[in-house]
Length: 421
Ligand code: B12
Image (cartoon, rainbow, N blue to C red; front, side, top):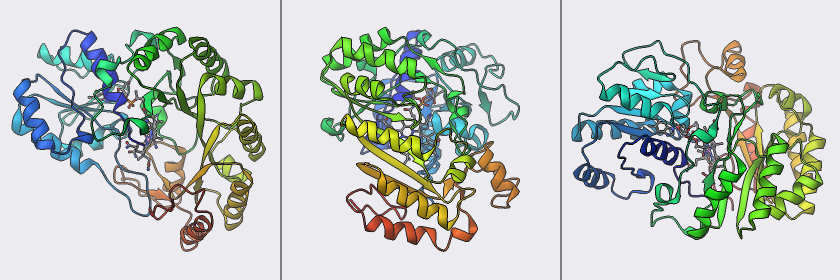
């Protein structure tokens, strides 16, 4: 799925609203980065350069791709073209604010959401003031930092409008595009391996559903018909999900959308509303079919909840993409077999299996890994490290691959990075 830089678009919209002139470049789709750069610097002499770092790596244990070297090169290119300070931000950056800054040699970093703090940082820099009192700011020179602050009122931030967001590169097939769209931030669930709390915080915050409908209509007018709600969990809280679906039904758009669902709280009324509002597919990280493993992950659902959710979605013709995350704490050969057998019982359209869990800093998984000697105390985890129960390491990857090969119609991508279908 082609991914448009929604995070960057959000910061651009807020920075423009604060009165700055902004030129944005989507280097992900550029076929000639130096040329794109040269052209941009011919057009504008920047006072500051922000880089949105969405991914540090691809979370694949078998063939990990570490992506920060290209950011380091980019920072160096910026230095050649300009003496403006280089500032990093973004989901990936926010997980490793100090080490990613040091690795890439950028001047500053902003952990967490950028709409309020990036314009504030620009103000400080323009005035020649030291910005270290700004929440979430990091610099290579100063180790101490203020923790990030997450706005309690998302409606203070502009929703990116098509003119900011829709510079869709020619390399992207519009038919395949699912426009990333965010309606809420923060996740109150405490899954043991997840990095979201440092990116978005743990407190749920929402955009007013009327503002969303108004904004979506601008995209619909531009011919965008497919949306991906990137909210961590679409159905939490259910009251907001329902309100949003009602507003979409009332707006009567001819759109399709997909979202990320927590397999706990879905009921037939909700599924009906989602379908009527345009939902055609959901992604569902049920991760395991074994209760002890789910307990280690701190999941608040049972395999029965997952089966029920899948059945109800299936009844309403909503496609389902399931995810299994195998090899974590508490996993045994039996729990793996149980999970695979469980996946076979579900009416999933596709399944993605991941073996080995990427370890993120300050998570319960990192603490378990440290206690078990999987990682060392000084490891900043920037270079991908994975948790895979040692007694399963010689068996699980091959076993899961064989299982996947027997079900090519269902498997999106197996653990060896080979595309099966
Ligand atoms: C939705 C999602 C997806 C969807 C995207 C659908 C779509 N059409 O866009 C799908 C499922 C396709 C996907 C795929 C992948 N994803 Co993903 N995804 C997410 C998720 C849940 C939300 C991302 C999002 O859009 N957020 C909304 C925007 C508005 O927020 P934002 O980007 O963070 O931007 C804000 C701030 O970061 C900041 N900011 C952003 N840029 C800048 C720049 C500056 C200068 C400043 C100051 C601030 C700033 O301000 C913004 C506004 O507040 C995040 C987890 C999370 N909670 O963030 C993972 C996440 C980003 N994904 C991740 C990964 C690894 C991947 C994949 C590599 C997985 C894989 N192996 O396939 C692919 C890569 C896809 C790609 N080409 O980039 C990881 C990245 C961590 C890492 N190790 O690098 C995350 C963090 C999840 C995790 N494990 O913790 N993903």
